[in-house]
Image (cartoon, rainbow, N blue to C red; front, side):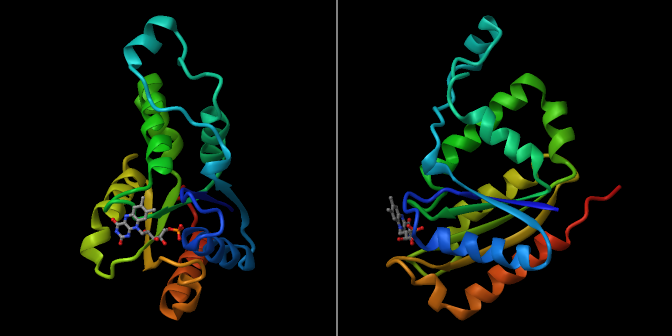
Length: 192
Ligand SMILES: Cc1cc2nc3c(=O)[nH]c(=O)nc-3n(C[C@H](O)[C@H](O)[C@H](O)COP(=O)(O)O)c2cc1C
């Protein structure tokens, strides 16, 4: 079982990163193989006009890190989106990466769904405000993304307090929920 964290915060040592680490550590304790991708360490260009790529017969951004990252997504069993709430939604880094998933759909939606269907996805997010409603756009967009491929499994979300570094690790209920998500990730088995 391979569990992949996709960490989309600008801060490499912020609360999102801490929460992704908690999920992955709990999954590893249950025997899962884990890997974290810090999106800030990679170059992923914005999506362009897919018609141009179609005419060229290749993506205009073939030289960035997208294919490398996508290979890791295809190679995992469970992926965990980690994003802070930025302006009520997903961080730009994660959004730019997810926009590029459309390159894969453009190549073959059926093939994308075939590869993603056996996987499960979960979400961790942090915010400074304190109600679900303020983070809803972020969580719901990522939930729909997990569920895009019919049959893919959604493992749920964890929403915790952000702000100063270290804040979320002091919040026991959030840490417990993140550990539970990690255990669920490790226990996930695709339907045969
Ligand atoms: C660009 C930006 C936009 C933000 N927008 C929101 C927001 O809409 N709602 C909110 O509650 N917090 C917002 N915050 C606060 C962050 O969600 C919070 O500081 C979080 O802990 C940042 O993630 P990190 O700890 O992983 O760096 C924003 C922070 C930044 C830098």
